[in-house]
Image 1 (tube, rainbow, N blue to C red):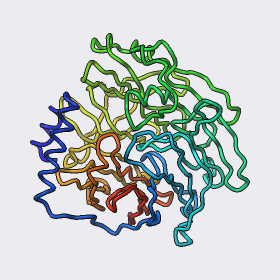
Image 2: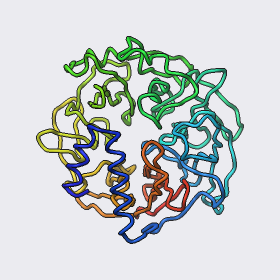
Image 3: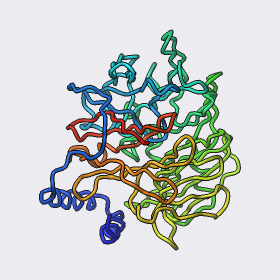
Image 4: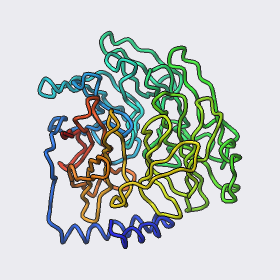
Length: 413
């Protein structure tokens, strides 16, 4: 974005409904007078050309197994009419060594357009078992599936962030999340806390994937009572975007509260038992984050003294470094497996083009650009959500530049 566009965008954030209208009119006008580009870059499609839509989900997971041969994906009939449809989705696996042939492994009854069903390979081997969220016996759950024997293990709660060793996960309330952040929760069960702005009830749970035992670790009131700000007192609270650090001894989470149309966000870190909470960034806005290692977090956030942008934050300190000032628009960043590079993306620009950026040190280069159709916008948007393979030489992303959601791969060098 230009500086003028960035300033206007920040101003309109206070008026979400008006922002949607202004954004749509502006993009329609700019698109009408711009060159019509479908995509740029050496992009390879993994999903087939048929009447279905294919996508993986969020940027903090990888669809590849440990060998980088097999890729997981969701297959649905319609992924642009609803943020969290009640129709089931197929879970498929592609064989990239065999002309991207695929087979249907199973189905899931809960998914959304942003994060799918938290589908992923299960550690520590990332080869034989997958885990995903589902709806069974009248409640949300997660399922561990051995794709060789097709043996299932059902866990009595869904998962949000899974440890690398596959032993445990952290999770949250997907019904409250669906009500307060469309496209990230599940729609089958109602939000039983909807009449409570700040419930004195659990909002984050520890899930033992070996024993199946569940333990609540933090409540909404724990967040509201921690370094309380005046705006919190009559506000509606939620949490989102839990991410475990690589060693699995600490996690980050976004604590958000709403005062009318005004939204506040702060980045909190804590031990996995909920202790030792730390207010890592409290300047009203934090968006997408990623652990660089056990003690550093890359975040698109706000520092009131400096501005919005990508920052490297050091956990349990006030230390930070502003990175890549030329990237002044939000994206979904992640580090390569060896930590030497970063991939991130952008939302559609004034001509509905979204960009992938590959970054090494201070060198920022465009890796690809894709058109985003207007029907994939707002809550049902198709974000690219780029993810690394295990070798660090390929990037996978979701895109709709061919008219529907598909799964694509590009070489990262």
